[in-house]
Image 1 (cartoon, rainbow, N blue to C red):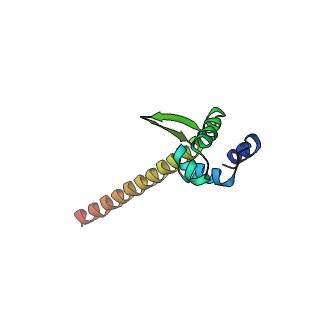
Image 2 (image 1 turned 90 degrees about the vertical axis):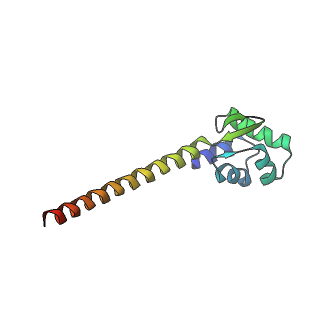
Length: 110
């Protein structure tokens, strides 16, 4: 994520900590969020986000009447982490079931 920050800082004049906070608060942002968080006009916010999308730092998706700008590295980090947590949870459940099965077999054979 630090490389993401450095790319923005080195290549875009409009870099600010508030912009980074906005981009990493959620895995996506919208023009309205940037307007509110950075206290800039709607046109300025759209320009910032479109430039970041054109530079490959965000992925622009149009849904109905609005544009969503997805922070793919953050999205991937969160979804992979969630998958890992779910996988670990499933392993624990399976181990718990195996333990219950062992106890049940011991009770039946006694």
